[in-house]
Length: 286
Image 1 (cartoon, rainbow, N blue to C red):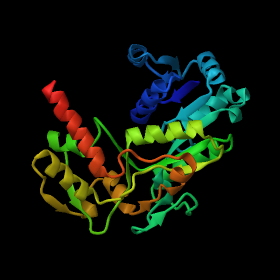
Image 2 (spheres, rainbow, N blue to C red):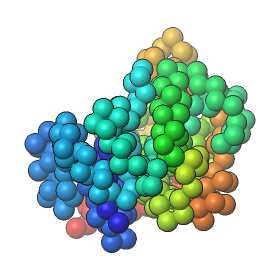
Image 3 (cartoon, one colour):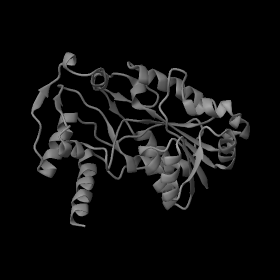
């Protein structure tokens, strides 16, 4: 299969690696010549998102399209770009389309569980934008994947402990779900092999947990100093942190397991962080 990644970032890279390992060809959008050179070195064909002809040809040739960019007030920029270029005339309904959304669309549940059919009550503007983007992609038969906090090599609490940027914030009763980027890629590959146009899936691990509990585990695992505990006080934190801690929920991944046959390789933060730390130690020895 030929797969087009619209927005080659953290998850786009993990998906590309999994897809290429499965024997698929990967094409990804770029905006700068430097980014094109980077993808060329990785063996991934690059197409300019601003070149209408390149984009039209890439979409026409693709068996599947993964859409990753965050939305704006008008919805998903990738959807707008494809509509603008008449790319939808290539009948995207016949392709696998995966749109990466966020569990932020559910809003706050005071620690309760959410499922794919739970009401969408986003409290932050980002969540409301995602709702609009979801509706756009569902109109052409896309599959929607709602993601929680993502982590993996290069983006995790161990790195933040190492560089001194970790903060040990304690808000009683606050939990959130998370997902290792390799598990996200595996779920997307499972959907590619078992497509259900219009399907909506929560992708997350099996154990929602408080952020400070995860940080404490990482410090114990690595032997790195644990930052001092900071009590939650909204006035003392940035608007971004306030929005993050405003939502408190547990996310169910039961549908993805049942319909896609997917199981996370890292079912909790413990397995995921242990694998990351093991890789760091191995790199040091090499």
